[in-house]
Amino acid sequence: MVILDGKAISAQIRAELAEKVKVLKAAGKKVPHLAAILVGDDGASRTYVNAKVLDCEEVGFGSTLINLPSETTEAELLKAINRLNNDKNIDGYIVQLPLPKHIDETKVLLAVDPKKDVDGFHPENVGKMTLNLPTYIPATPQGIVEILRRYNVPTEGKDCVVIGRSHIVGSPISILLSQHNYPGNCTVTLCHSRTKDLKQVCQKADIIIVALGSPGFVTADMVKEGACVIDVGITRMDDASKKSGFRLLGDVDYETVAPKCSFITPVPGGVGPMTRAALMMNTMKVTELI
Amino acid sequence: MVILDGKAISAQIRAELAEKVKVLKAAGKKVPHLAAILVGDDGASRTYVNAKVLDCEEVGFGSTLINLPSETTEAELLKAINRLNNDKNIDGYIVQLPLPKHIDETKVLLAVDPKKDVDGFHPENVGKMTLNLPTYIPATPQGIVEILRRYNVPTEGKDCVVIGRSHIVGSPISILLSQHNYPGNCTVTLCHSRTKDLKQVCQKADIIIVALGSPGFVTADMVKEGACVIDVGITRMDDASKKSGFRLLGDVDYETVAPKCSFITPVPGGVGPMTRAALMMNTMKVTELI
Image 1 (cartoon, chains in turn orange, blue):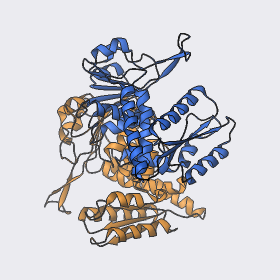
Image 2 (tube, chains in turn blue, yellow):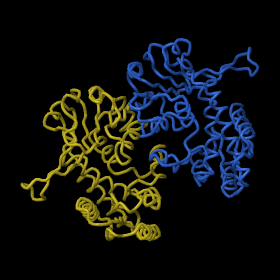
Image 3 (tube, chains in turn brown, yellow):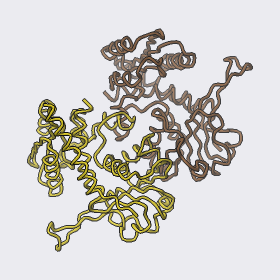
Image 4 (spheres, chains in turn blue, cyan):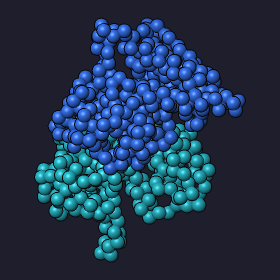
């Protein structure tokens, strides 16, 4: 059983990007600059955004954090987005989700210039991904593809079951792994709340990708001997014994599932850090796609 | 066994659209106007485009057929597209595919104004479809969804196998039927050339959608008793006994498969006419989406 070490791979990716930044600098070229808009003060969101800024510093990208109060109106947010669209110094930016309830997320996503949409959430970029054209791929599916690639996990002709059909993980990873690429060329089954006999469906899978946010959902009896299991779940649970005050739980019952697997991602240290690294990869891509 | 009668349903749809056109006219509103660009003189393409013009006439839409010679350059075609983008009289248009080999199809698709892209092939519209936002859905998957809806075919929780992952049929219908809609909420498995044990995969399916262009590909031994089978294949075969000189073959071995089915589309008279009707529905949608 091989543990897919997202922490190690993401460090490797950051080191590679740092090298590329040096090359850009040496050639007198512009270094990518990432901005992040954070509306309000949700603890988890703040942690994520801060991590992104730290990642930028490590690889040598420029970064700007725009923190707007939680009472920011939709119009004010759209104005801030418009400023970023027109700011030549900013190559890419993200709007940290979720947004406060009084703001229409779809309207906000549509306002982001697709060329600067390093989250890959704008319909034009989602469409390019679906059509297998060069574009920004959303960070979590991109991170999953990248870790499969770096560990040479076999995917061609494999039966892949994706659990969860969210727009940011389940749906895009199901599309990507169906395509005529490596990693890809899987026979993908996309499962969700309406799926009957989920256990049986999973039992036949060579690759299981679970993105539900439901701790311990995938149990050993659902997993075939030798399967590859990718755990996207990150649920915070209070834990006074931790310095942070919480611990992270995945969607896979790791202790019982791992011994059956050919490959498995741990939580933490699997898909999470790969998601962070993928955002940095997308930010570097700005220099290639435009 | 119910034959899903695409010919009858498409006539019904055209009649409904004709009623809507009358209402628009009575209200003094603009009636949708569809243009089609045909490059070269491929026989099948000409037949399709002519059919679309006839459909427009029947429902009362305006229509314009722009026939460019096969030696048209990419630049000339892009100019023609630009003219349509800026022509206020044209509400929607299609560029008939395939294009001659010297023209880059992707570049052409990207040049179409997404607001006038009634084929739903522009990445922005493909992305909106993937994100379950209102948009133009490509005609064939849209036609399939519509015939399932009109016959109240049960889809929620059903195992659906899609054979073929093309950008215009297999991929989009797999996405649509996975979504939280009716028709939809299926557990979809997308199969293709790299799928192993396709026969076994199909045998478990409640719904099979085949879009390969491989006559008679789906045989009775692949189909579960009571399945719904949607045949997207349209292959022309020379047949001197027909007035047209050819007959149309589907991807399903109809004679042996049909008796096992709960629902099945015939070829011809199934998905083909629904595809035509879906383009008319999209053209009417212009008045709603903008």
